[in-house]
Image 1: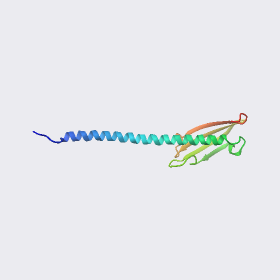
Image 2: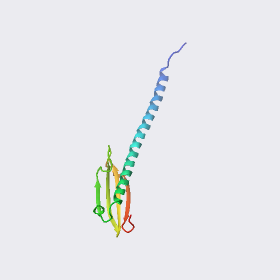
Image 3: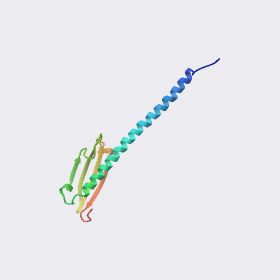
Image 4: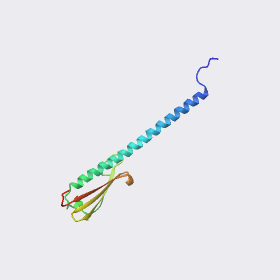
Length: 126
């Protein structure tokens, strides 16, 4: 007997194998997309914190912009689909020193934001 083509069982096995491969590939693509979006958010928040630190370091020690208090800038640290919000608190822990605690985060995700602390000394000049 001369058989041509594939049997039903062979087609089902081949289809199942293709389905498993396509599903695995789709999972990898979705996970990679999520990881890239997450990394982009961390990069944006780190860049926003660095820029804010540099701008605060350039201010005069006794200036009004470095007075103790809590400050907030919504969506001011970046642009695009997920702008970066900044919060910072200025405290004088000792005479001639100011402690600045900065937090930057995307899309109201404070728990995954970037935090930095800057200590400014009046006597040392930095």
